Image 1 (cartoon, helix red, strand yellow):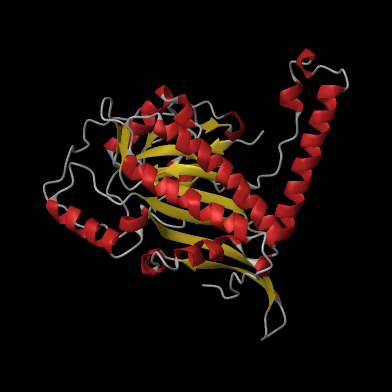
Image 2 (tube, helix red, strand yellow):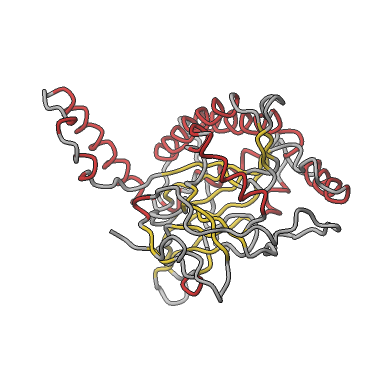
Length: 365
């Protein structure tokens, strides 16, 4: 059973982010994420336990802590926790008495580090993948909350107008894809690398070519992601997104600038093997359910089951401007983006059955 330290001195920089602010940390195992954030996001995460269906579509919330080299934030509860037993309890006490409720003057952060010592501890959605491909899709045509100052509103409205955010309700905020192993022309060594796409890449896309951005993410032939494999990945994402859409239709909330985080195994061989293991396991379970052997007779059966390799995950993230709004109806600003992402992925899923050859690119950087 792996143990995970949350001592400040043992936290390391997180390097699998496709977008967002700097300063995100991870424990050394990579299973846990420590995200600096303001009071509003902390309070939102603390309320998600009262929305169990919604909670299944966000990273598991472990608790809160204070980032300080002079403190031992986890000691109030425990130094070490087991990532295999995410208990959703606070790991430490968070003193919010010194957190400001609002800033008098707003200035754009430009993705820089948030000025706060407070943090949330979350499940690292990118953990346990060999080579995770990561896509961050920013949701909403309106990107600012009611308390946003005029300067921020104007800036974000301009971003929305100049990208796919306004017409489609979403835009690509960033992504990275594994390009597989390639032989160096200089010395013949075998190298592997990622291709990264920053926020400017997503802002340059428009309604006519937005599909190309998703093709770049899913159809990476150079890494062994064949069309049939990519089609299966997309199909699984569609199933999850439709479930999320149904949940959001039954919630009364406002979530401005939230994102969909897509992650799937970018190593083609590892992904195909993981799908094979998954299919064998499902087949074995189906056989067990029909051969007269009742698994319910063994209370410890689930504890003994081997952990399947991860193939993919999609989660709703980034709740700095999120709140529950009883009586105000569902969040159509958010849902508009989710619906259009579903439509686009459905188109890609259908196109993946066609003989067209997709080129995910071969360059890194």
